[in-house]
Image (tube, rainbow, N blue to C red; front, top):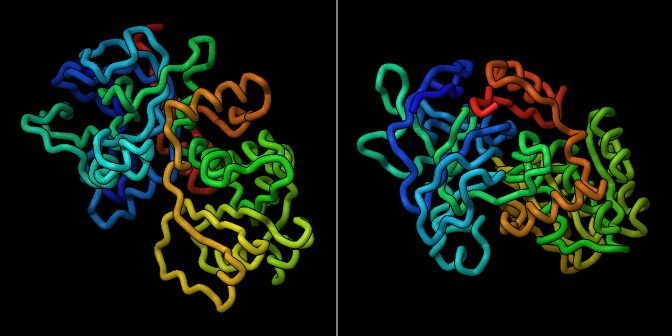
Length: 368
């Protein structure tokens, strides 16, 4: 089967949209999905800085959504041909954390999603010259017209929804919203500070508003703060010194929860100082430097932990988010700008420069 895909051939060069060949039909437990849209996440772009650990050349993309066009059957296949699906991260399905409904902490998460996946001989995805392409980025590699994925990665959604816009619910929006509703369990009367008003942070703001919690959004960019305010947050520029004190004034003595999306050690310490006693800080961005904690930041029972994929079971949280969207309470579509797949390099530039919150790439669909 031949189709178009965006291939990253080196850590420095642009993507190239080219013809690729899929040399395998769905096996038991797998499905073939025609991709309607795929969000671009900063994790896709972080491959450029992965120190060679992510294999190239590769087809990236891990916020795909589309229509199932073939299945391999098997007991793990809960979707059928014609179903509209959102694709999420891969997991083994049988380790202790997977069995405990914590698939984001799968024992094999890094190998399945980030640094290699499964070795294949012969390769299932090749370029026009017959050379192998890494085909399992987050179990999907959905910067393409089609993706062959494990069926457990797919979540069935209402076919009345705009399927081409739903892909970011599988990762970026899932992460921010999941941190609020799953990790923190925030509700009416709770207070939350969100550091960084990008896709993850703004999803957290929307989820906090939908849950009845007060949120404060911290960012350097006035446009992002305006978006956060539109979605119900109190906007707070990073500005001069004294950020913890300003947050405490806005949250009646300190926030119960804080979510950091910046990986800035200084802001992490500010967030801890802005928490009320027993408050909790969640980190979703990968730290690339040491995180020295200032004296006293963990006093009063304050806690800090990393949150992966919003502590979500995608099959539970994604339908919940689509229902909130249908009710006008989780307007994630207002963060999206769409691009043809052929314009992937423009989408990357806009994402890197911060002029767009969530690019979504639209492959040309053959079924239309």
